Amino acid sequence: MFRRGDQSPSVVTWSPFEEGTQYFAPSTRDVMINFAVDDLDGFLKEIEAKGVKVVGKMNTDPNGKFAWVLDPDGTKLEFWQPK
Image (tube, rainbow, N blue to C red; front, side, top):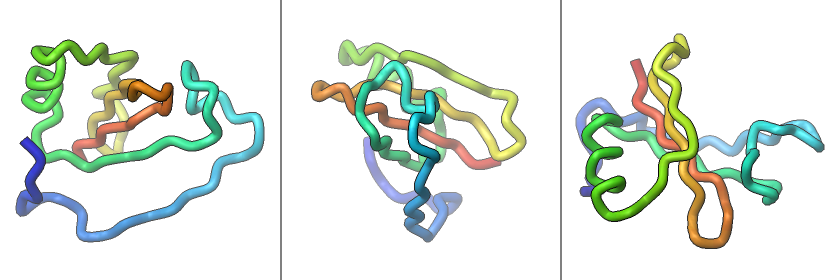
């Protein structure tokens, strides 16, 4: 399921957010982890079939498609398929 594809970004980025941001909601944690994926829709089908609840999805961002889940500790995970 997790493999690096030809379209995957070859960088790791650390990006701080303003204190008090609501971008990590519904998580109450002060961090979020972002993963680039090659096929967001296919990936979501796989994890939903395993019981993972998607808490949000956006297909209209100019940077690509996004979806979010919460891990068992309540940390928000963002999945991004670049344009």
